[in-house]
Length: 259
Ligand code: NAD
Image 1 (cartoon, rainbow, N blue to C red):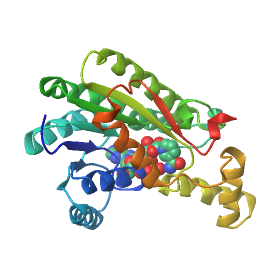
Image 2 (cartoon, protein in one colour; image 1 turned 60 degrees about the vertical axis):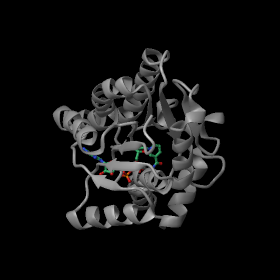
Image 3 (cartoon, rainbow, N blue to C red; image 1 turned 45 degrees about the vertical axis):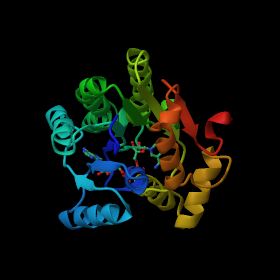
Image 4 (cartoon, protein in one colour; image 1 turned 90 degrees about the vertical axis):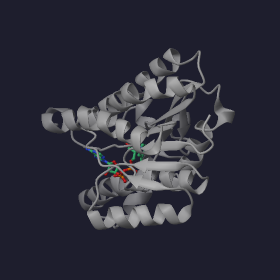
């Protein structure tokens, strides 16, 4: 078992993924991270991560492209020695009634939120098996467990991601490799900000009121889940102590799915 583990986090240039990357480097885990951002933003994020503790290396890969995802895993293994922890966090949303849902958006949401995890897991598992240790954490959503209107692709992708998580958990159950899903409720990130903004526009209310309405509709705590709170849960699931947490779809949702 390596002294210093290596975590590969997809979708870590922003929001929840960036929070997870921050938490890993702060505990001394080396991080490779992917996601879209300008060159300046990538430099800024890389410097910020490195200042918090362990090394951080940006490795670009379009989560819609299976070859780029396989190459990402291979590059991480070659340059950093391993993918001990794989966090699939890249995600996009598109909101529209199904009759008007653009087919290209369906394909993109399924590719980024579901198929990308298949491709990275498929590429990373052989190395985890060779090293006899591994943690796979898929960032699903409450929408992997329950549905909301106008989110056909996202809900289908996240339900699929939880199914994939369970299969991988069973296929690795006899080994020190685990696979789990985390299911956050509303977390205040750019992905949710877009939904807040469009709700404010539709209802003719200000942003603060649109946020309150969004929370009132689904999240009984009436507060957003913190990015740092999701990251802390990921760190636990990725720890040695969580060795028998297998195939879980672990909610962190302010009571959303308790209703
Ligand atoms: P975000 O928009 O802040 O971050 C998304 C990340 O994915 C970014 O780094 C972006 O560059 C990356 N990404 C998008 N398309 C990509 C592509 N084709 N190739 C590579 N990278 C790509 O959103 P977020 O809210 O932090 O979402 C992160 C994950 O958490 C997603 O999987 C999302 O579904 C999930 N999630 C979010 C919430 C929430 O309330 N914010 C709730 C539940 C689950």
